[in-house]
Length: 101
Image (tube, rainbow, N blue to C red; front, side):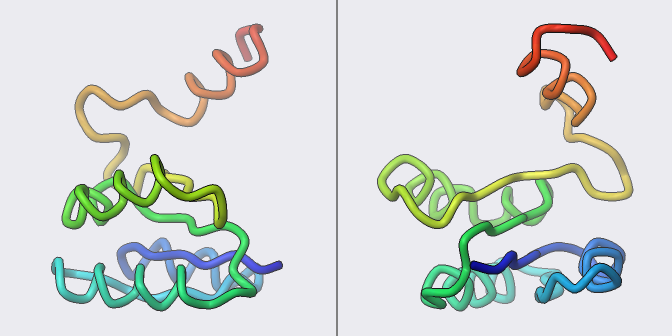
């Protein structure tokens, strides 16, 4: 099982430094092509996608999240921080484990 990152250049470069393959997306067409490649690769177990890129193809991401069991899709903030109304990673971890870090 492998990871796949879809995001801006910084996110893909950063994850690439630890061995995670991915694709840079700057528009809805690139995002959709990268997403399709990731879900069609049977070796992909986790797709990491930045929130801003996920917003470009929100309907497709949500449809896949709510209808498929595998691979797992994880949205993360990019270097600009979380989108308005979205919890940051620290807040999500605090909520998940029930203690404040």
